[in-house]
Length: 104
Image (cartoon, rainbow, N blue to C red; front, side, top):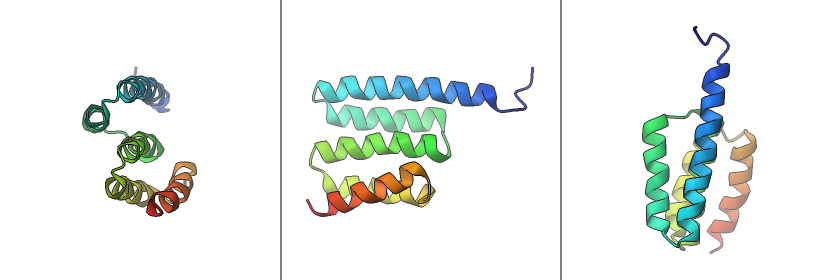
């Protein structure tokens, strides 16, 4: 059947986001920051999320760069996230985090 309400797409996106967070977390725990950032890029290319799910995935990438003390890269990702939707919950959170990154 056709997914007229978007329910199936939303459920698949939520499942994919859960897998993303899990995989990213495991790589970060293993101090594999570069691999973790690539994992996010691969996810974005494969799943092509939009709106807030895309922002949340990119926020993980921003955290990956920040934990590796690549603050300029983290700030660039923050700007991309804000550009998607600066008024969303994630967008507003990233605005605050960006201020902290700029002080590093």
